[in-house]
Image (cartoon, rainbow, N blue to C red; front, side):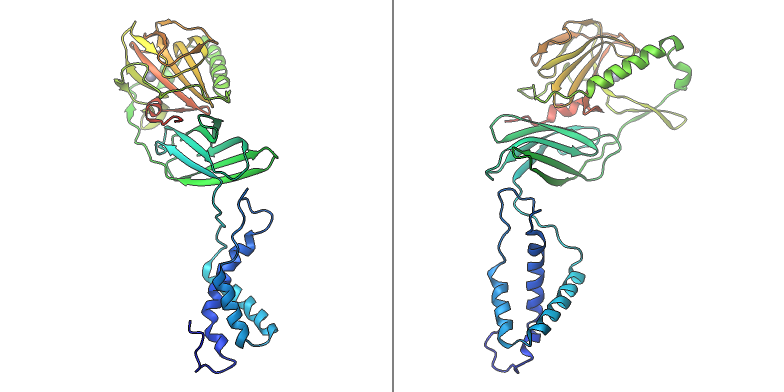
Length: 363
Ligand SMILES: [Zn+2]
């Protein structure tokens, strides 16, 4: 923009400033629209309008027509700018929290989320999250400005999802922060059943027991311990020799009848089964389908299960360290041969337990 253009005729020069006015209006509009009290930026002030637009405004004043016309023109230009720009862009202040996750969220897998507080002068007292329709629970962990959480992607969710974090501060104020994250789809293997499962169902006299156990397990897995117990990375309870993967679909006449809710690891009767990580024994006992089973509560809604054991070597309610001998592999419950069925539940959702092995834990 040439300011000292002597060839311009008085009264019309402002028209040539229209592009600058457009730029100025579109630069100012989002700030004006979001500088109100609802701006959700604790500790962050809305940026003042940049210096350049003021200069342009002053330039208009030099040779501009009457104020009324300017107001009218402004209104029209704002409308034009809106039409060109589309809906108001979201005001994006510096987010008061840094977020990282590992590994990349994948369908049927768990992943960890770490939240870092930025020095905004306000301390959150709680953080709660949501991803792919499931809750992501957080606990303070490690250095004082860090939080750790675990999320899960249910089977059937493979599109990008939004991680919503809600932070509650001491004064009761709540800040919401969202991050869009891509989800990797998983190809689950499928096997065709030769016999319709309806004809190989459990006998009627055990149906009540099965129903009772299902309710008990579901209630147990929905309980959330607001503390993260593992202090080092997860390890496999047996060597990772997978005989049947998680999520395998069982079909009959091409119709999905059931899915494998765990990961089968090779293990002859008597082979040792170890705790994948530290936690509290939430259940140790016999179940109709799982046989002799152990569940460990690791905190934040994360549970691992160890099924079909020939012998249980821990007691319900006790705390165990990572690697603790939980029992011996076996063939109890509804199985065709000895193996370990390793189970993972996050926020009540079954997921591939092998995803725990790649999960980054708090530093
Ligand atoms: Zn299994």
